[in-house]
Length: 158
Image (tube, rainbow, N blue to C red; front, top):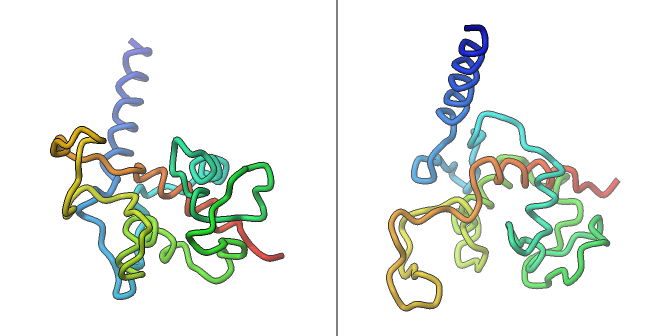
């Protein structure tokens, strides 16, 4: 009986955690594209954020941005700005907004919206020429966004 009670408690805690996640279409942007509230209600994991930022199979941020603090990550990009020191001149709210949908901050940017699922002009299903299946999934999860924000906030010039 005790094991069943613990199982029920664990399920309720997990359900509550998912209930706090802000859906992509429900994200509230400020006047300059910032997103004040955490998408998950929990802090990001710096190490997981570094992994998402660095790996081509995850966020792929490193394909466009360079970070001197990641000398072990090869083939850093030159399309986007160098992110050294970004934790000193951007707030977590600004970084969250840029990750969710950079076009809210930088009109005309080529940076993808990492937490967006609607309002696309031409989403397709890979290279098949067919329309994307519904619903479209965001590139990063809400927790992934929070993890990347946590990592970026560690990038300081000191």
